Image (cartoon, rainbow, N blue to C red; front, side, top):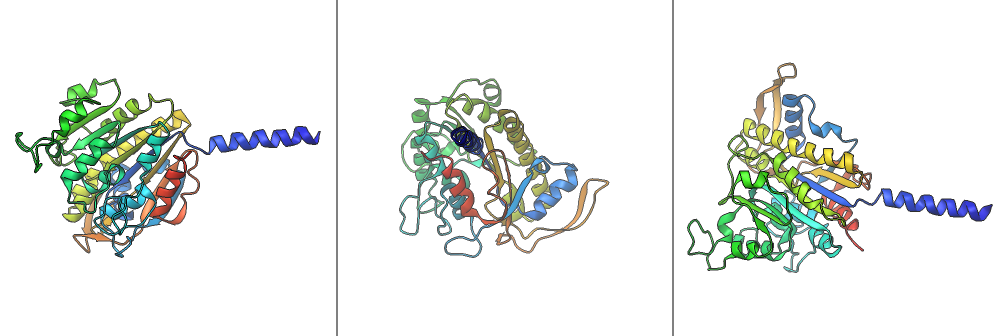
Length: 355
């Protein structure tokens, strides 16, 4: 009888472990998204997708060398679980590489993807697939991304993948990274091809450098995210996907409330697509957070009934040290609640992508 009881406990323990180890992980980063940005989202939508999360908390974002982080150091913490100096792309103070969650996932035979509404060489997406001492090194970051083995790449930045002699190139050499990607990936050239794509290893560099604002882009972040999930989920080993709502940050830098709101609404739509998949899949952890808050954004007037924000103020055109929200869903997500540091997010995701 005792032996049977012990066997039952062992089996239940195994089942519990399996249920708490996600097969797939989607990390959503709302660049520059703080509590006020989310309050504005709630005001204008009524019931944003972020309300669907049951696990929530706040994360501190300071970098290794500054109380106020930049996107490079903030994203490095999320990608590697370690602090670094402002401007660093997944390297430490000695410029030694910090292994990223994307690289851990690849070692397990998982598919990996990066989606952004900025150049794919920009600080946040770069931190997951590149290692450089400065975020300004777009050419070198493009080299790293090309060599990274990332299966799905959706974002701007085409000019950094074209040789110097090509039209619209932003490179300083004749490396033809676009052709190199073509040997291993399916490269689509327009929105129609993108929407009708159903294969594997997808690259869509849909803008020469940075794309326009949400109301100018021809694809929503939700559409990009849904396609990335469709492609990556074909791998039976699972996948890791990072999705960035890049321009929430730019609205903060510009001190433009309408810009912030349009971008975070677009971002929330993408989060909804991820949650829809995770709720059906049952093996996917979703994490939504930010690298930092931007603008010192404050809401001073509005109408819940009319779903509008009418008066705002900003304390800076830069970043602030305000803690950022953390939302999580799915197996293994319970640990990301309460007040935590941003490095715990990186360490937790990596833990689920190690042998």
